Amino acid sequence: MGALFLLVRLLVVAWAVISALWLYLLAQRYKGTRACPYAGRWILDNLPRRVIQPVRSTVDSFHVAEGQTVLELGPGSGYFSVEVARRVGQEGRLVCVDIQPKMIEALRRRLLREGVANVMPMVGNALALPLADRSVDRAFLVTVLGEVPDRPRTLAELRRVLKLGGILSVTETLPDPDYQFPDVVRDLCLASGFRLVEHRRHLLGFTMNFAADEGAPAP
Image (tube, rainbow, N blue to C red; front, side):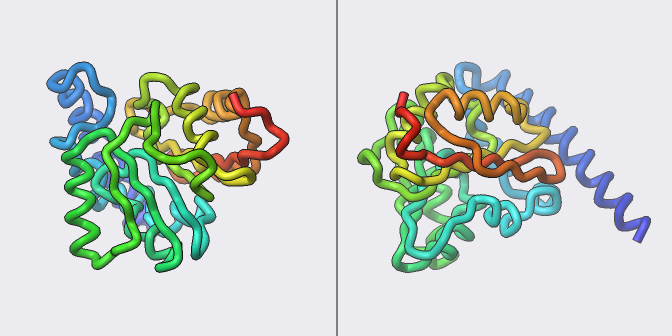
């Protein structure tokens, strides 16, 4: 048991170091963008990540349910998308919005392989979401908030598309170079008209859930 624990720790450290170095090199190559480039998509789905950020237990934190319309902002190649789509069921829908067309194409290929048909992948900008007002029940973003150039505007957009009483889930995980600390996420969301309803701590990060209450003024 001790040897297994040590192996897991070494695996996490190695993944963190390699990911941080690779992200730095990518940032030097792709200046002007903070989103993980398509060339670095392997960082988003690999064995170490599945150990420290398991898909199912992380998705549990989002509290999605059958029949809901859910927005995933910044899905990348779809690490969480298939699981969320299966949980909302055939009567529900997952809308995935990513600014990079190549990531959306990678997501489409993954959905095709997995036989998932209730997902709508869309190329779009977090600062102007291509969705109608009050059109989604849940929205979640994982290690994405720190990548957007205008966080208050992004949160205002998320507030706009969420139904009254809808839930926004924000997950942050190390070693993401744009990691947002819990106090920062909480203060940003409260200032944008959300109410904190849950704070879950994970191995190397956290998930915060916020409600878009009727009584909270939209920014």
